[in-house]
Image 1 (cartoon, rainbow, N blue to C red):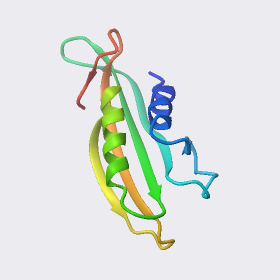
Image 2: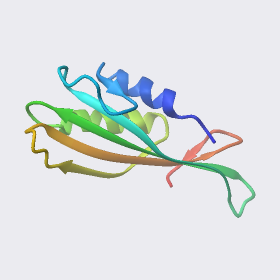
Image 3: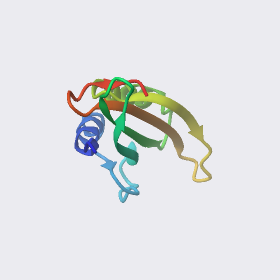
Image 4: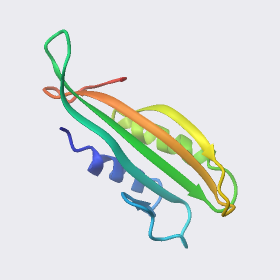
Length: 119
């Protein structure tokens, strides 16, 4: 198991201050970014005898006005910097009127070298 949460948090707070690893508590300050670790599966052995950890994160972006596209690009770039690759991205209809984007990222990280590979 590799703890990627501190790296994800650090990268996301470089984009905006209102970042949460749980359901956002501050809905007065926008944009709001929430991240959730969905998978952290240790010691997956490859045919080459290497041990990998599979990690996956869900990142949600909310804005009050405008588009989530610019923030989504910044999140995408920030996650790529730490070896997480986007595997999905969609706009979510919000009855509140907020703009909401759901993004999914994952990686296969070599446990011995900490080199990440597109999963």
